[in-house]
Length: 206
Image 1: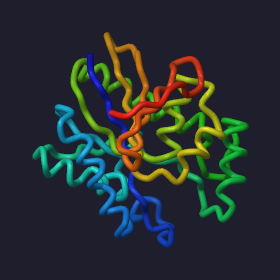
Image 2 (image 1 turned 120 degrees about the vertical axis):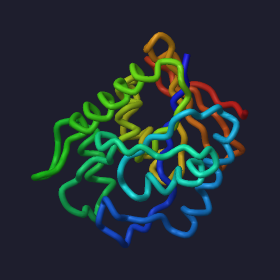
Image 3 (image 1 turned 90 degrees about the vertical axis):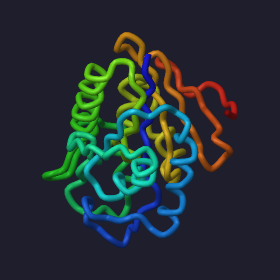
Image 4 (image 1 turned 180 degrees about the horizontal axis):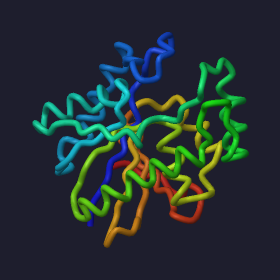
């Protein structure tokens, strides 16, 4: 049995419109310590990440603490919108209502989900019993959750839109997902269990 900890990046500088290079804000850099503090005793053996700077930098301190290099996997990158969208909420709702909706040269959520889940399952097969971290993004991570729980949709995504960083733990046994938990590092590591077939169920603190 192995635990995979997806880490949605900390607050990034929205003034920088380059998706690859957008850095963390000073607050984001400070908040990354919350991720390190939560994961410091979780027996982490590998650290992977989206190649985007904000994702890598969110797990950088953890990498240094454990002396584990961050391995970037391109398929874990965030959705490509195509161009900067001012009304992100409306655009996002359109995409969640229609998984095939996208702008020209952009990606639909179905494409984002397929490549993220593919990358995840390749790691599950590679490390079937290991604990590891994956630096991720809000939309990319949400599509992974939706893969295991189709009830997870726009309303659920909206609740975590401003939650940066955010940790989601997926537990696998015999390469089958058996539990998904959402960890809010801003609320004393409050854990929300996400059923594999139903919406979010219970809250507790660990």
